[in-house]
Image 1 (cartoon, one colour):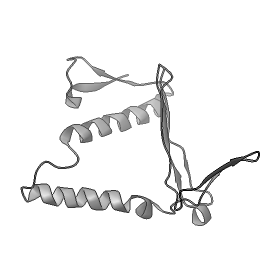
Image 2 (cartoon, rainbow, N blue to C red):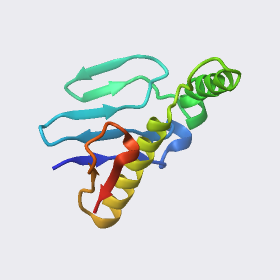
Image 3 (cartoon, rainbow, N blue to C red):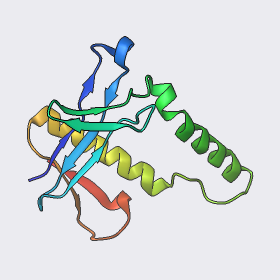
Image 4 (cartoon, rainbow, N blue to C red):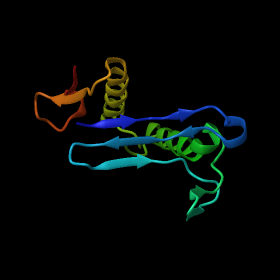
Length: 129
């Protein structure tokens, strides 16, 4: 059984910034976690718990560098400078994972991605359920 959670918190957003993270747990017990970046890389653990430095406040601040790199890479590839940073396969897979998460939330049960052709092309994946 796989479990994925994407908690978001808007309460206190003005004071603390938005809390956006992703956690995915797989059948074998493997886990993937994407945390919010801190404005200062500080982590303190003591008897009271674990604390970190202040979070990067807003969505534009948090992802500005990534968007700038994506746009610059896209422009460069349009000018004949090579392949785009984000491939067709990346876009297809991201869309399928997002749709599976949405459907899983709606149905309140896991939704698997299946590949009837057993190929490595994400375009051959489909939602099961």
